[in-house]
Image (cartoon, rainbow, N blue to C red; front, side, top):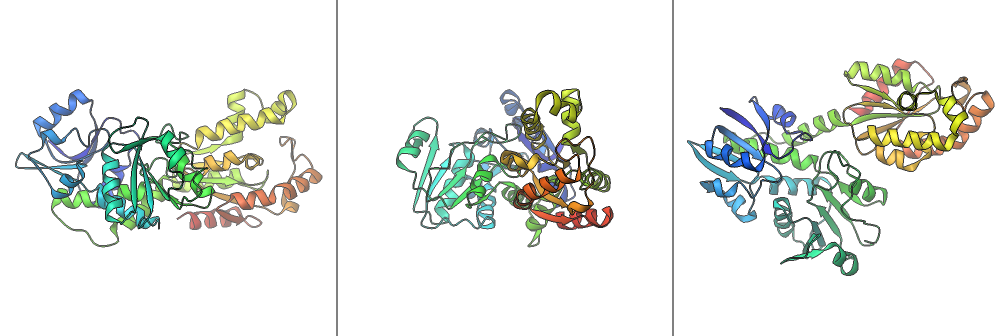
Length: 412
């Protein structure tokens, strides 16, 4: 018999197993089911309790013997407990989403809210916004329906909306650069909530943050609903603060450590030491470019020019930004493309390894910093970009150990 787990169509992106391992001591499995296998799984009832994720939050309802008031009100189920063979459906997404909205400090009361999507999670979002006192709530979909408007209608008639909640899978790993709606014309937008938690910061959330709008992804909701689900599974209550503790642990574990800075500032050495200490994989963007192109960076500059190199660099950064829980060491000029930093921050915290220019050493393998004069010039040109791009500035004029210690201290 399966003890506990998560059922859904595709679960390669899921953090649920790691979260439940920190909640209580029980076996928790990820169980991918096709629609054909879902019925057989529920009829067999060969489990103690399971969470339910997309696209099955409504599909499981006909197989249940009972639903809690919370699940009945929302019309969707995200966890099922087997009580002596009787399947009881419950919904903890409501409390999870309320917790996320409060954690993000996004105000819903008396606001006009757009909910993107029409699935089970959108029903939860609607109920949460009602409970929080929204003035007007509109569901948005590609197709018009009863109580549902289209994206075209939103852009034409509802651009004055105050809050957007993404309850669709658009932007979820591995397609992390997809965005469900363009927010540039929403001049009264105050908050963005995205239920997607992988990546940690979706393209939609990133865009909002870049505009100075309060925004947060779905990890806090995931943890909060998991804690509540575990209480339902085991008929127990956990201490206050458990959700915040696990959230911080998971966020730290999944967040990348990204190093930016001048050539010879120590990024590669610092990155190697951090990766070793944390038992993480290190990705050096310059190394990846050379492997992909089959020639050295100076040869790329000589043969194709800097413009070609920067495009190759952006392509590599776009690819590795989708990874989580790794260390990324970037080339000195990676910050010159704004999109690189935006992509790196989707799953990472950016550290500027700042070594004073008089300590930087020119070498032949750095085409834009091959002598002292070039180093000083590049340092002055890029310094403000490094500082504005970084989440944390780490001075590296002392020992490498000191820089590593500072980064790990700030990271945790």
